[in-house]
Amino acid sequence: MENPEKIEAPKTKKEPNYRGVRAMPFVIGNETFEKLGTIGTSSNLLVYLTTVFNMKSITATNVINIFNGTCNFGTLLGAFLSDTYLGRYKTLGLASISSFLGMLVLTMTATFPSLHPPKCGSGGACVEASMGQMAFLLTAFVFLVIGASGIRPCNLAFGADQFNPNTESGKQGINSFFNWYYFTFTFAMMVSLTVIVYVQASISWAIGLAIPAFLMFLSCAFFFVGTRIYVMILPLGSPITSVVQTLVVAFKKRKLQLPSQPLNSLFVYHNPDSINSRLPYTEQFRWLNKAAIITENDKINEDGSAADPWNLCSVQQVEEIKCVIRVVPIWVSGMLYYVVLVQTQTYLVFQALQTDRRLGRGSFKIPAATYNIFTMISLTIWIPVWDRLLVPLLRRLTGKQEGITMLQRIGFGIFLAALTMLLSGAVEAHRRTVALTRPTLGVEARRGAVSAMSGYWLTPQLALTGVSEAFAVIGQIELFYKQFPENMRSFAGSFLFCGFAISSYFTSFLVSLVHNTTRVGASGNWLAEDLNEGRLDYFYYLVAGLEFLNLVYFLVCAKWYRYKTSDDTSDGKMEVPMEKIDAQKSV
Image (tube, rainbow, N blue to C red):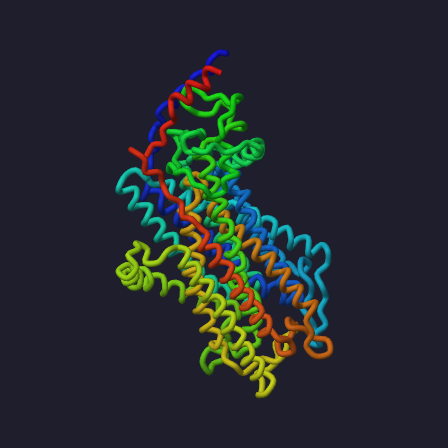
């Protein structure tokens, strides 16, 4: 049998012309206006659906949960298309245009009376949206979903692409970009939850939605103006292919017996062009190790790689997929954790609508969706306190560079989430009691009496939500980023968003289940349209119970989890035994 053709070494690639800081104004400008546009549109969408499209609270909540879930779940497809076919520049460009079109169509639904149902009458009679009006609204949502699917997994990585990661100035530039990125996110949240939400709720929905649409147009303009100076990383192929190959080969060889000395007998190879760190052999998920068993039919190329990767995989490939599998149970725990965050975007808004939202003693009322700003303020304050004050102290106590491990950070965030729901239930019980036993402040249209309890009572639970998010969500981001193989980090971001997506779907199911199975009085339920006639506090306690169960599940998973380590043999290279290659060539 003839020896296989020797694969030529890849030619040295020309170093890209990194523009770094010169590209930053266009990238940051695009990021800022994109976030102002998308957050300004989505933050008050629940109120828009209930007041302009006359949806019931349950229907609007489910629509928002499904919309958010689809946006987040779509990031997996966006990351795949970006890494495999389009590249980040084209993906971002197409997604930005789609987001702008979505916001434009949504603005039209508020501007033209024929595209939304008439306002509810004084007697509470409401006309539902027609099929044509709903179709136009859903068209806007489809464009927004496509935009979010492409922007969310790519925007941060595209900005970092503009700096040379191999130079000190480039590394400093990347760090600077990350700082500006999170600053623009916080800035956009602040402006959206105050100025834009106020315009939407108090002045005009048409103007309030036109502002984000115009900002998204500016985002597109900034993005495309900088085209000539961007570094555009070409797609290198999907890392999912290697994952699928490993699973297929492991299944094909499932009946084979693992050798007694697997480390010395399995196929060991590391592509010299790979950006992935070399991983040592582990005993977890031993059935996957069978993918690296060399049989008589397996051939090896001159450079040590497998001739047919669909019949033979390396230990490196096997260990990379193990890194992903190990994270999955932690990811499932994260999905249950996100249920708490979903409540701040839905039922907390309904709570705020039936509280005293007056600012001081004047007549100005804080828009219901604006209360979420306290979560952002809490998060913004807590992060530097944690990073600059508490981490150095914990570092001295634990001897760990991060102060506490990533899993400890996530676990404490889940615990705080459970406490948040207990506190939310107590505050809602107080709000309802005040509404039923004391003079009210009028009636909220299509809902019920407005409790005399100040809306500021909602601040503690929102602040605690922000601290919980700083522990759990940021801990998960760090875990996924560090534990995924390096070539799958864009998928790591999508992994997080997919968790948000499934959580939104699960919350929608949970809300529908509670709405249809619980009873309060003769005809009400826990999640009644008028919160005074329901028991939202019971629903919060139910979620708190789920979070405590989730915490127990997480602790079991954390005890089982093994962090990814790099191979430390010799100079870090995993050498392929030459006698193994020669033996295969002689077959």
